[in-house]
Amino acid sequence: MKKNRIGSSDLHATEIGFGCMSLSNNQLENEKIIHEAIDRGVNYFDTADLYEFGANEESVGKALKGKRQDVILASKGGNEWGTGIDGWRWNPSKEHLKNAVKDSLKRLQTDYLDLYQLHGGTIDDPIDETIEAFEDLVKEGTIRYYGISSIRPNVIKEYATRSNIVSVMMQYSLLDRRPEELFSLLNDHTISVIARGPVAKGLLAHDYERKLSDEGYLNYNRDELTQTIKKLEKVAKEEHMNLNELALRYVLGSQTVACTVPGASEVAQVEGNILATQVNNLSPDTIEFLQTITKESQYDKHRE
Image 1 (cartoon, rainbow, N blue to C red):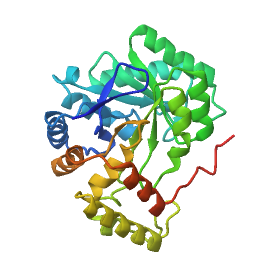
Image 2 (image 1 turned 135 degrees about the horizontal axis):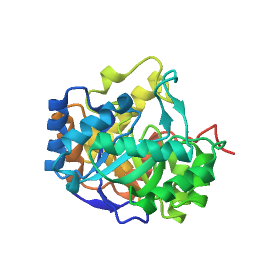
Image 3 (image 1 turned 90 degrees about the vertical axis):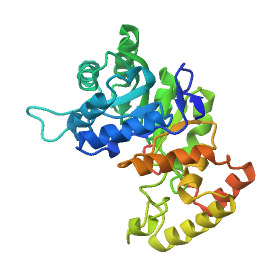
């Protein structure tokens, strides 16, 4: 499988990664899915401490036992929970992040993370303190590189210009093209996008009809969504691929995107995602046409 360099790092991730949030509480099934992904060439696995309040990391750690050296392991921190906290709360402080990553390492049964990401963030955070925490962790060898997981333009701009992040995880798909306005900035700073949600919650998969709802999706109402997906299906057919493959190839068509991390809750979904590596890249003309039949939108908040 093709591998792409993540930003300025020496991490080379397979273009199809694995979003671990989709895993269940069935450990045997989780291991089966993760092992299938590895056997088929996937080397990038993304989790977070907040997923199931640590249980997801524990499951991933067990599944990767004996295979840790074969993968790029990424997690996220910045959300705090525990005694005296109702649910969870945002805490990007240096003290919390340095403690949180140690807890993540224990759950993941490893002594380092290839990539540690800030799981959110606001412009009002103590950004210099947060960056200092990440830099300390790099110096200590606890993490190799760091990035952020954010869709907020103002936050992304701050970290792009003030830190050594190598990646930004963003929701990105044919039905959510908002990240595209930031690609030029990220390219200028040699920062890669790690794309989550590339099939738009299943709306860009073969059984999308059962995913449709009266609420639509983002700035598409139900009718717009239905008509747009039908147009995309037609393009997919012309390109000799299915809708899922078209969705993944579109996202990977940008040089800014190093890796996409679709989830999978069963082996068949892993297989379907990996098939996207066996079809041709989309031509510039096809990509341009796809952009004419989908909406170009921007984030309307968190801009300044």
